[in-house]
Image (cartoon, rainbow, N blue to C red; front, side):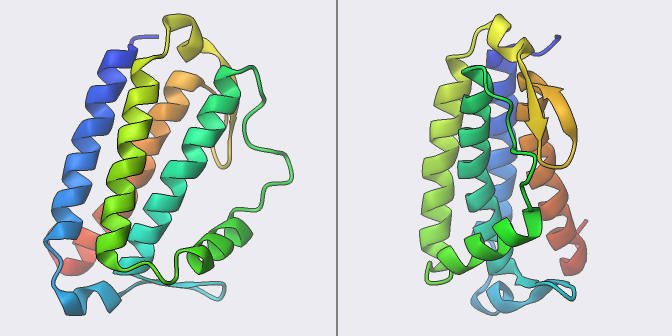
Length: 160
């Protein structure tokens, strides 16, 4: 694996900074702007931030499981149902509370990743969408997930 724990922390920190810059620049009316609509869910910019916060906590739990020798995402994991439940759980969080929670969770993620050994990064586990990956690649998928969602928001704003 070419990635080290230190290089992964740099990647995670860089994506955090970009994400925070986008969300902290939003004006009050933008938080309620629709981003995604489907038959199963409708997400606003605020809902996207809640999803990113939720994913941060869930991915850290998943990554720790893989480090400890677990298999990662359970076979019966249903992403849409999980996301709907998490949206409900974060329903009463204000955008500022979500930003604070994101920073708290991202700091915990970076601290944990910094503690990983090269052997840890080679362990494998199942990602909810991408299948079996090394722990290093699972961690990289966190930043890709976040990047793709923020890119969608920026495109809707006409920026990206």
